[in-house]
Image (cartoon, rainbow, N blue to C red; front, side, top):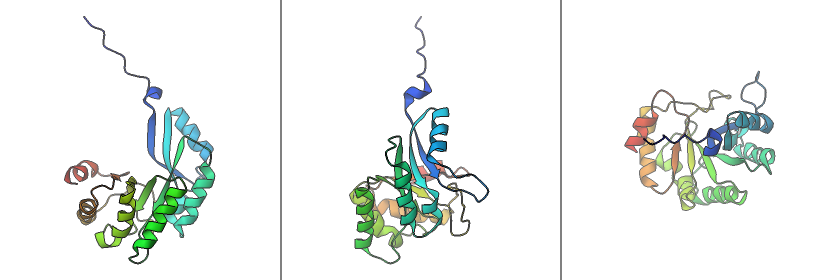
Length: 195
């Protein structure tokens, strides 16, 4: 008879949280600071996290919140920055490329695409997705409509039309890693299988 090997300790798995929000989430809630996030990560044996700043999700210009994120997590190796992006206001491959180059120069290797604000229409996202695809930047898809709910959660349920349009983007950019993030109401499995 052979002994069943023990499962590894949770801390040995080097868990990665892919959706951590820093900053003010609601007017009556305390701000989610780096110290608070690190304390929660330690309590749950989470080794590292991808983090974005809520100001970049809910306020314009998004660049301000993205820069604030870099200031907040500077020198903290466990926290990896994610910039919140949406397409340039008009079709402009150079502007999209400049945004991605600025992001990469700042050491940011993951993007959060605000598809709840700018709908997932290929013509709208094509320039930015092309620039991101050139560098194989992993993209977390955020379907929350922060225009309506300025303190919107990162959880959202895209409509069927949005999923159909997202499929067109994925087919047009097959080398761009796109990750469905924080979906609710059981959408994740059917979406992944159809893409």
